Image (cartoon, rainbow, N blue to C red; front, side, top):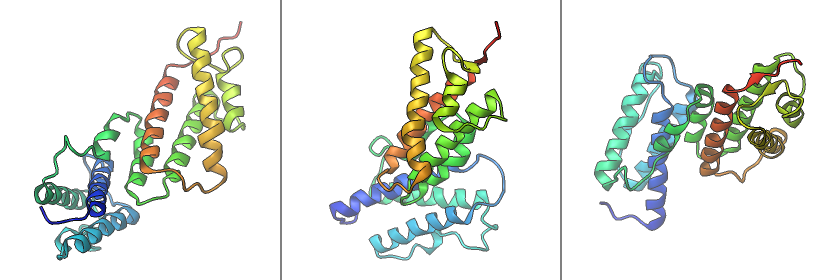
Length: 230
């Protein structure tokens, strides 16, 4: 393994995780075009590796003519880059827990399609939380009444209140109350904070944890039912 400083080793692990995040965000099949920002993020990671290793890694980069940024071309490039890191630096899956492994637990398809690519960026992870809370808010509105104009905690109160809400959450009364307070809490904290200002304090790990939590709330919403009139 090449001689690296501790700081370089830490960054190497981060690059590995970011590459796994890109890999996991790509659809299994298809040849549709990939957003330029995803390609730019990927190429930037390869440029960092070039400086760290002191060698030309142009063969790993994606260029404009490469199948018009297709899913398949990026898949091949990312897979080769990950294999390069594993082989050259003796990286093993059980020693480095990449984002790609962590985010496999996320089940909601809309959450995956709108948020996972943002995890491959170098920063600005408040965008992940902003998008995830928007998805949650929109899902609450869509499942109850798309015409509702309330937002944030007022929407949660209108739709999920255990006594007067348009929807009834699954479970015993105390469980319904508990989840109702969780939805309110997300709106009062994560949603309101990221929707009204730029927030630089969130790390990638914070974003992953938030996605997993919101995934649970989205799954719980699937089990809700319209409140029947007496």
